[in-house]
Image 1 (tube, rainbow, N blue to C red):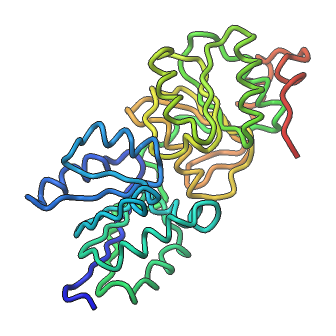
Image 2: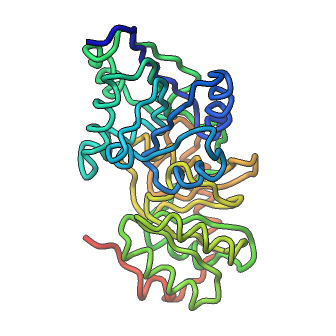
Length: 308
């Protein structure tokens, strides 16, 4: 039985609000005591290892289960992903969390998006901790809101709008539902003369290397793999080619834009959440953009399709 008090803190803060800086400052306040950061994002964990060196130990949950190095103070970054991924295809995330919880003195759960259901589940961790505290600096909100949000009338309209984009006119980020759609769209946009980078699950590190070779692409086309904890160049527009059903993911994906204070627009198939938005104003914006779009049957419509 543990002879010391165990404390759990749930800390919520909006995307791009400096959580990495906070972790660094917090580690310095610990003195000689080392800090362990558990990140479910492999690419982010690798990036942090290079940035922090031996000052802070960074592991994925799966890495910790192999090494099982004990630490008194631990930060679980992007903790909402434990509910989305740990309950489905990465069960070792929860295995690592509860095993770590047996001996750590202080655990901090860090996230920008935690739902009411998640908060209720965290409160059920009382059998593992002596005290549980929620520190709320902003939850499920955007720090940098888009300068424009356009609700598209259809996927066909969205594809026409993407084709109307000019070359060398800033970075556009496109979220696709399936990896096959990513590769199809990349092929067609490259054929049209655009500089494109694609990224699907398990390829975040490869995408970072591609950015070194193509530092100013026209498009980055991806699945949700780039929705969390990835540093991207300044983004001019974000396109969603499918409806996002989880608010947490919608916030994280929109938050890829504006991280350096730049203005950006969002094109989506659904109405926004928590943003000032006029359906009538949207109608006229869509009408104006429709007049600018080429009405011919374009390459994207011929070759791009959504898997059922």
